[in-house]
Length: 141
Length: 151
Image (cartoon, rainbow over all chains, first blue to last red; front, side, top):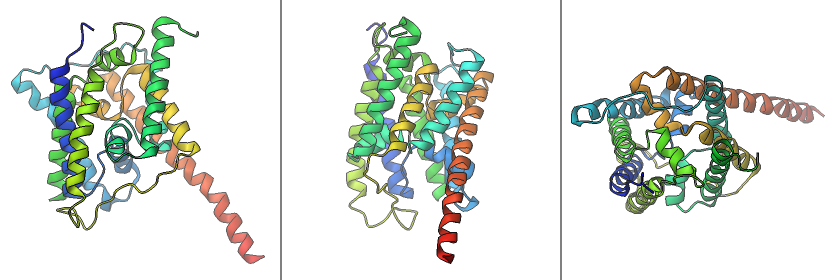
């Protein structure tokens, strides 16, 4: 595991957990990004403000990161345009249908010991592992 | 105050993804690739985030209400149903294809990378399509109920 970075992962994870707890403490909302973004797209204007503010903070973070040495570069995307679009559609549709993503189910939901979130997380992690196995190693293909 | 709190929480969350390396699709795919050069970092991110948010939630539950809102909106459902399973599976396919989930995808908009912009646009389209589909599904049922009430 040459790429394993447990210290930065632990610091980052602590900040993510802190943000989730603080959002609940201050606004009473779950820090599920698909729900926050989906609501910002579709909900009535009264409930949009904090959602847009959260996403603005999320996008601003890496911009401030450039001041302390985190390079702001376009991420490496080992996927074609077609795959990128299909994946985006699946992530958008799937997270709405399944009521959550890695943050809402994987962190906030499991932290509440929600059976729904545990099942959802096991499924999306297992399916994603299977997809990568097929794409990179042709296993089962 | 709700706006400031939302902004700061998004900012802290974004720093968490940045420091942990989870903004990088290649890092996430390294975790999902258990048959390759497996990178367990994502597990560490999740476990630490779970412990911190779990402790935080326990403290928050002692309060009568949130600081800047009338009530805490904890999710109430606890049933495992078809849409949950199907939605999680579809999300898993998309996540595995490119290594992006909604948080890192939005945060990567900061780089103005065309591929990220296209991904986020497609993700938004998928969300809106889902909500339109749910509305259309709900309509005929509502009509039936209305017709039934007349009979």
